[in-house]
Length: 366
Ligand SMILES: Cc1cc2nc3c(=O)[nH]c(=O)nc-3n(C[C@H](O)[C@H](O)[C@H](O)COP(=O)(O)OP(=O)(O)OC[C@H]3O[C@@H](n4cnc5c(N)ncnc54)[C@H](O)[C@@H]3O)c2cc1C
Image (cartoon, rainbow, N blue to C red):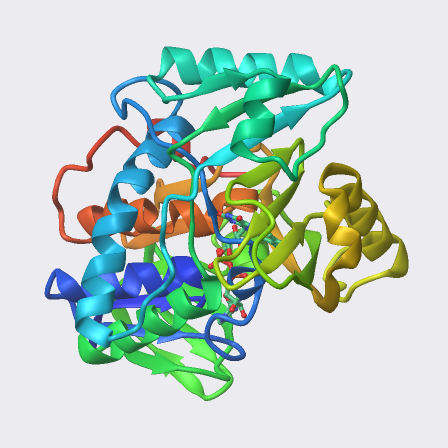
């Protein structure tokens, strides 16, 4: 019998498996399809800035913790597996027009409170920093040097390889159908190929977690929210910073590709791209960086983000169920928050105190 059984092989489940195995736990991970092919593959790979991890909301603490862990984890995985996940601090520009200015002002105020480095750029400064970016004349522009990026598919490959090296049993094509509980303890799970037991269990099923949690009496309100992405190829990157404009953004890759994201669509478990989605993203991109009109259209795809009804992720042990943990509902931030989520769950699995209180990230019976 394994110490830990993890349900879900996205970036959250794989990161937890890698972390738990690194802490000496024997781990089995069950994935209903293929490892790392859902939201975690589809994401843009933006890592928001970190600040003082002792202040702010739980989500800010998660972000600050994650921001600090990324360079260390990336280096460790590169040395261990030979796979470079492409992590680097490219910096970010936040651009807002019209009514979005108030939102960005509030964000700037939070960065100030939490010690996140940032600077406002006027039009002349923006031209010096990123001459290819042309927002409206009344736009508010803020540069945030701590923003980083990674290449999701490479990071997932590195995690899978790291898990294999640490002896994690990775089982694919094996959906968990049922979680069996008795007297507040999980006794096992049923999959399509039989029943399995472990000392502790972790639900990390992304947008599919709601059904698993409701079997245990918890209504986490997890629903899928589709995000579409367009990938363009340019000769060489026309700009260096990630440019964010409300929910949409441009991510320049060092190889000259530019990723345009993303839509937010409440269309159930319905993946795929649409002409309206792709058109909207292209218009946004060419409006902000007109030179992208000459770029080659390479690809588009979509993924299903796990949205939690209350707006913040669930990370912790389930009350009234002492050997069941949950790590889901990360919505637009699951990739960037994966290292800190794994660290906190790893601490809970091995009975260590967590880096900070998880009260705000907990789940109550539904
Ligand atoms: C277009 C787009 C852009 C994004 N950009 C960013 C970004 O720039 N930065 C960022 O931080 N985040 C980003 N995200 C969000 C991020 O991708 C997600 O929050 C994150 O991938 C969630 O990871 P996960 O492991 O919880 O879910 P998933 O990657 O969806 O993995 C869950 C896995 O669990 C498996 N599973 C589910 N139920 C079962 C079961 N019963 N039995 C066995 N296996 C099961 C699924 O098959 C799946 O493989 C983006 C998402 C999208 C869609």
